[in-house]
Image (cartoon, rainbow, N blue to C red; front, side):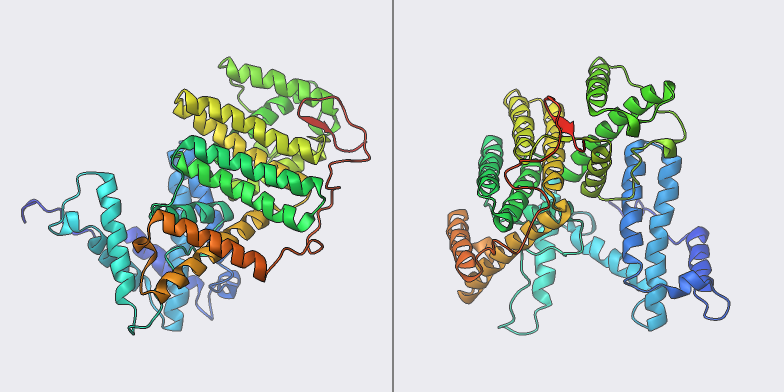
Length: 453
């Protein structure tokens, strides 16, 4: 690109400057807003996460006016943090923007330098290499331990953290050979969970259920899908079907909370058939009137959990813990079919169903799916840190080890972990009987049963 052809430098618009000035006034100690003055770095964290998910929801909806509004709310969080930092003399909005600009230029030498990148994969390789070089420059002494390669902030939502960990692991070359291998791994994890369920070993079951969900999320990523996106789509599908049921009942002057599990099951099948035939019901307004009304500004895994809790409140739930595990396997078999015929659209849909079923199973047995998955994330990261420490002692980094060597080191780290910290069988309990036997009336339904007699 010639000098004359280069675009003119971008400058902050009056709108951004206006928001910065408003934020400063809101934080004025004498004339500012009491709520804004009360906030600090930590108290703002939940708002950043909520706004990010509201942006994602707006983007999925295709409503550009809504998207513009939500992006403004997310921008406010950045400006708010910048104002808090400026008051402490740490950094300001200009240092944030300049730091970002420097990073973008450094990570895009194919645009601002002489390197070549013909594809998006080329760009990602350049980006990763630059990022590693920047990390290496931060080391202050020859014996400093490098930052762990397999390390992701624990503050991330559980499923996003799993995805990030898997992305980093993939760069080492240690991954499944085929999609079928990845799906088979899920079956193995379910078998291990079922064994602990039958042995009524709650501590081990907690870990195995985490491994199931971790494997499902990892497989979804391996197959080329964004786990968060496919679960959001599945949540929308589930929500839409329940709203369809509520609309039918609403037209009859009835509420879903006062409807039997058998009738809900029949209506579910009816709505599902309508959808398969391409018939889509338009939900009535306002949405707030629906019994199943879960805030959009939540990680997908949390929305799924809350939907399942609401479903349980209707009296529509699994027959047993074992049937909940079986549902994951049933959804998995449908994914195998779509993989075999290479139907990518249907495969993404089925993987969303597999994740949804896994979360529903964990919640039914009595555990918090996010906590269970984060425990699996911690375990995965911890084992890789053991591997990286071992390689560091030899003066090597993780990317310098072969896939087979990483496999051997993983097995050793796993064995070491079991010897040093065996599972406490009494430390973790679930409110449901482990063998799935319940003292409650149940209906003869293929999937769900009456939760409370």
